[in-house]
Image (cartoon, rainbow, N blue to C red; front, side, top):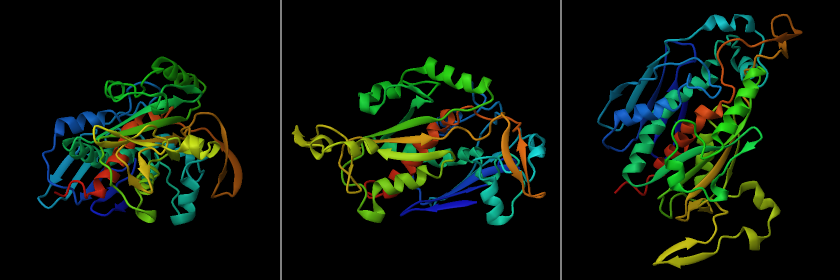
Length: 348
């Protein structure tokens, strides 16, 4: 199991990819009316078997809830379509760029069925917690959206190019504001070659008031980043103009303030809506880099931890050619949980 404890919330994710079930235990949630149909629709966005190079493994992902009146929630999801035999040839042979070798060093684990406790399958219960957090924030008119802005070498429009909330909110199916066809073709090319491709997911938060967060170790960027890096395959996070700020002068990268009908705004948003770890009232904007899915069908070099010899493997089974496609709602979940945990703006 893996446990995150924030200021108000706690989230415990349990289970393994090929165990009987996976689930989540949450604590500290404020009381609100849950839309279970809406939550199921959110979870469906994360499911496999929906094209665009995703795994053909398709679970129902219908959570079984245990509700309580003190802010504690437990939900479990059965694993009904696991095929552990797909991984028999991988015993003691760590897959390149997976957690296999590191988990072996850590606790002696040699069973590589699915991804075990490190599997992207565990993002299903993550989305249960995040979907609930999103619903509460929406009741306060705080909207969290994510979408793919890049797949491999195919780049679409993002917040830096002025994509609007209306455009993001209108996306259905494939999580891209534009370049849907080209991105799908990039993924398919990788799949046919028994390979995979990386991607960039952007997230924008509208309606968050100024004053959320704090300095240094309690900064809003740090909290959001911690929850984003819990998502398998995430290798980079930047806010606003991020690394592009390194090539700017202060006169280019600063965000000048101005009044708009008595409300303080900034004329640009290079900071991504956060100054000094505290929200400034502008949209929160961030980008998340996903590595290519490590599970590929091409032959790869590895080692046999039993015989102590070099060897090669070919990974069988059902895998995503671009894991980021199904990770878009997981990004929304991470950001929503971080914002909900800051808490001061909803306690009253």
